[in-house]
Image (cartoon, rainbow, N blue to C red):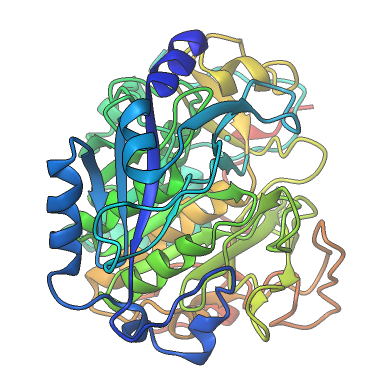
Length: 474
């Protein structure tokens, strides 16, 4: 199957095209420009994107996705060379060894020969990486305390009262950008309303080869079961296209975009796409990382665009005790000075493998096969036990959807009052809670749902009396 993927992208390449801003400003390789100037200063003049799209279409290229600030185009390799000056080759990433991962790399300088006055930059898109995730789940043995879906997620969020009152995410449009969404019996059993849109035509919307997106969607839907969820599929088993997928997500005009991934190497233009989505009124969430940060020279890059909600990890023990998950990242941004990550946190497992939440996934997919080596499930049973800031972010997106349904603000600052303080533990990157909250390791703490009675999170008897103990195994 991967050989077919390689052949497809060797025949037809993909590029990111960035129109010139009307102001003349450009991010170039410095996303921190977004701290010094408003997003509006990076917008092209009216109708510029239309003119660029029309011109490239006349050349025979396909416009796969477009926003106010960028386009993703595809075409036969000979056409890319003719219009942009270079072919885009498939290259295997040598740093990821547990499964083959590939990237597109331009073989020479990229510059458009059309619309030279309108196009500011052309680049090969960076790849992404996931931050790892029968109708009835299997009996899991030998992996310790774990949470089951949907019930335990509802209890962690404290959302039982909201659900009983009919606040279950109705009318809220959520887009999850991830690896895909398999039609799992778990989703059908619970009556979830979902759809899948492929970021590129080479991606099959009916399958989730990696299985990560299917798992993450189950956690989001556990917290907000009646949202309208669209999965924008960004990946096959060997390739991923996060910028194109994020652009497609913005085109759908959702209320919430959930992103449980980072990029391989720095992708400055993604920050402009994220900032533009926030400008348009969308709440965007990104995972803090499971050891990654946004250090520009690193291979694995977390995303901490200002205004996006970054989500770290908190482990909830069988007795309800909370501590920073030692699997989750926390850091001071190297890209955006003064930016601390995470803003809030969600449920997350502990080292070494994060075996914590029982997720549905596509039977026999990459994650089903890989996790079966240490999570107590079968390699093709359609279930895995996992967690990380990926799951924490999906959970937080569900909580945000409930807030939006209630007409509440959904910024990190407005959600702070609904966070349970976490004062113990340390993150994988070495930040200590230090007996105080907020703190560098977990931000404002464990995000929970807003209570109808106005009780603030800090005063709640969160989980000690309600945690489902059925998942405890020796």
